[in-house]
Image (tube, rainbow, N blue to C red; front, side, top):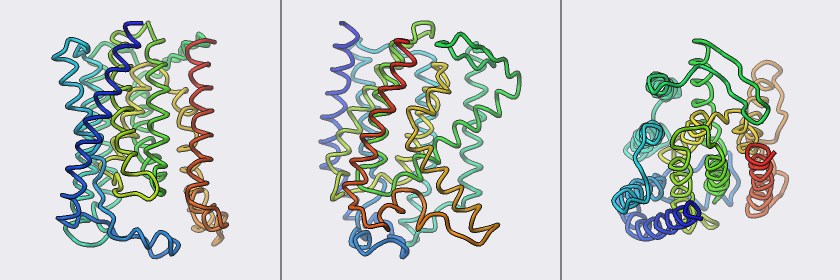
Length: 330
């Protein structure tokens, strides 16, 4: 019961701070014209969003940091090695995304960091994460605890971690195309991993990881007050890269890398749609989808943006519940 009380407190504190911070940040972003150009390939409905401020990921990033400090000072949260590693990933990928968004705003076009520059940054952070993670005493083992399966990857585990972090950060980034979609799915994913962390008793500091997840859920719910349709602000790469990489780091640290695929099933499908579209176009000069990722394909078919988001959130909720049942109770 104490854990539930701490989690509820963490969620509420982060939510309130996020909502208040949004009231301050959004007018500031409008004032400095921190907006991103809408792609010419999107529908007329999307073009109406041109001028909406980006870099809104700060609305849940800053409150997450502040909430953690408050809870630590209240002795409701203990600072652990695992929390340090997760926060390193969270803030490093947020900084990378911030640089990308800043360049887009400064140049008044959609040309921020190049894809290569962004990838190098993602890989560098993932490599540092791996060495810190291994220094903490963890073994290069893929541990599927629920099934009692352990696979020793040796040094190949480093490449595995690199792939998971980079793929997850990009997957959330690709899904961030409709109002409330990436934020809503991320909130569901972190809520799922919060519960899963509390059940991962064999991991040192699992309770603190769970509370961190609930802090981020609260901060994301506060962000969604402004990002739900019609969005007053977009999270930008500042938010999407940070969310995806942090989900991956939580999954890796709690030994639930396989569970991550289930929890983030919608992100995975969206990413595969982009990969399939790219391969079909490059090698066969054909289009499998009217537009990738899947949410834009459904828009081209005539689906309303809000209906797509609702459907994806329902699917995300079902996947999250399934993952919790598999990882904790089965």
